[in-house]
Image 1 (cartoon, helix red, strand yellow):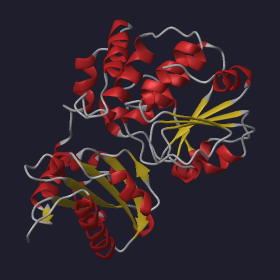
Image 2 (tube, one colour; image 1 turned 45 degrees about the horizontal axis):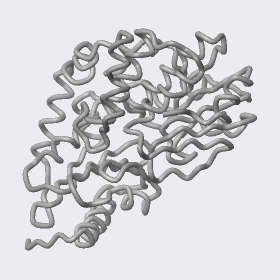
Image 3 (cartoon, rainbow, N blue to C red; image 1 turned 135 degrees about the horizontal axis):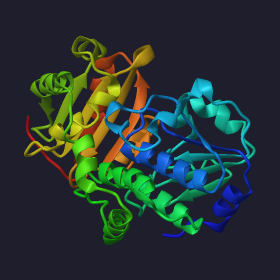
Image 4 (cartoon, one colour; image 1 turned 180 degrees about the horizontal axis):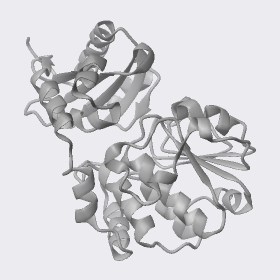
Length: 328
């Protein structure tokens, strides 16, 4: 996977570079951003990584994670803003001003719903993760993978493919992963930090969320609510609910899982996952979001009950369009 020459030249020419990604960043977003930061540091570029939201606790083990700044700390303008893993400009949240004030903006993403909002747009929906594309950029810039870069990229690949279980995993994904292991990434250590080290408070919240799952459309939809009150009661942040939706998706007979998370200012963050037929990216796009055919999301204003009713109704239509029938 080769990066466009225009993108590589923009990086080479830039004297100041901002790297940013979407709100509520996941493993692919953080891993890609840190890998590129380390690689560009090796080139003497000294980029800054600015995020709208803090690095999730389970990703803070990654090299250079403590160098990431919140949006309030990132001033501009920059010669180049590298926007990673973002389907649209508004997804960068508080970093939007820093991005739009930059002299040139590059958009590197793998989501089918990307709006091509930048001066340079490299959007490859065949890539399993933005980390796979970041690996191509680093290689094409002539920077060798080292253990730090490899660990960040491997974390991105692993999280966005569900530990290489999702349908977006290709033979090329495994080739990139193998190269990263050769360069020093340690899969067992990365998995231990991301998947196998959880505080009890997070697990207790997960248990409550699982017990509260509701089924509709003859069991084809499993919906999960993660309220602000629930997160406060368990003492967890939104980032610590990452992955909860996977348990709803794994239930036998479920085609679509949907998780509703209450976040700041009365907003509802919605995550969608499907197994075989339903294009949840299309559903998310109708609410101003996007993502992958089998995994996508959006953020809409509350209240929760109204949002949930509306979304379940839309998912019923998506199931019918995909050929499903059911009796309640």
